[in-house]
Length: 540
Ligand code: C2O
Ligand code: CU
Image (cartoon, rainbow, N blue to C red; front, side, top):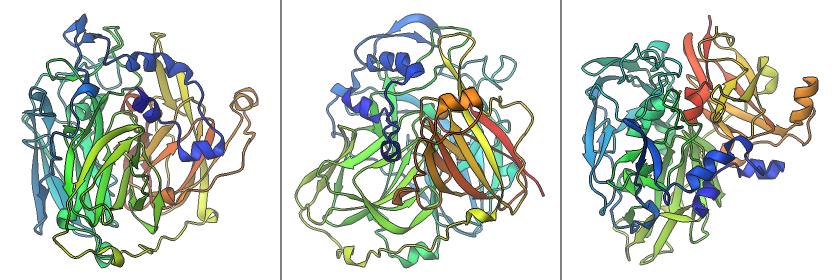
């Protein structure tokens, strides 16, 4: 489980630099011990037969790199843009040696179409729910909005990172059932960026996303065009996630063992998937490539590097291009974060390279002897896009948001909240349209939480370690380190930010676009469901 322990995140660059190294994970230690044993020990509990033992597939023993990396179909946009995307149940091969796996998808394959749009050109999408009426993963009816009185299968699609009116945002309660659809218009008044779409149904999205409901959504613009980055077959999406697979090849999602409260506080599986396959390979030419990397995992952080020690050139993050490209040894992506990177294979003709997560090779690059097109590496500029730093002085207020962790009522798992409040409590954050605010996330837990705000993009100001004991005792912040400014990877526009433990992470955000109801939450989907999610309302 060396890969898993290294992916057990929490060793962020920033964390390390702050000296925030995360010794024991206290509350999570137990569940991680269980997860560590997952592929050797039969697990208990499946939805219809709690207590029954399920034999698991030893995923790490599958022969790696036997399947070619699947590439998604692109849904290009002919204007006026109108698309129709249907969710359905499918069976798909996740590995050469595994029987077909039942899953849900926005396409007939496990790989949802890439939606490709132009900045400033509105796009209309009809999201159609053609799923069965019975869920195949273990619903926890004790979670918010998940009662026995409402249908089991519900979906709503959120385009993560899109600046949209509230009614098109995929609000968690705007769900619809099989046989129904919902049409949303995305104005796309925003810069080129790697966005993505996923299910957001209240209390269910951890399961719906696990089942397979996610896809990429690329916005392009003239600034990006002018850079002449590798494109067409030289621009490859990499959608990363992890799953546990039963011996008969089916998706396994663990439960707590308590039939009234099956929720678990985190999920990490040994099966590392890229574009729907476990540890595939891809043929590349000896030239630079652009990779759009997205972490759609429920809880897992990816710590990516190349086995050749060659640096990865990062050119963009969640909300678009960085101001200048940055050569980084590792790319660490929390759930929902994106990395837009260049990898140059021009010195590797005829060789084999690997993309690693921690110590595990997860993707094999087979570099051909020759390129079929002229090498364009010389033309990749250092300066990518002008990004003005938002001055702190422009903020009208600073909101303090605590990240809290409780022993939950069952006593064997955790409950995580924001500002000690549950989702359904009245709105407390009401920013005014076209004003700028600083939000500081005071992390009182033992864990890194990726916090995401809908509607907006923001900039990271800094992170600073503080004395948690002092905070609890005197309700005062005593800093124990200097403020750490963003690394190059995080100095662009973000919509999801890693908040390391025992640190205060400050972001600055301008509330632009629309008034209405939105939300912010931890993107560890298990946390979000119970109950690390809060509404905010942008007011006129
Ligand atoms: Cu990626 Cu509220 O979502
Ligand atoms: Cu969290």
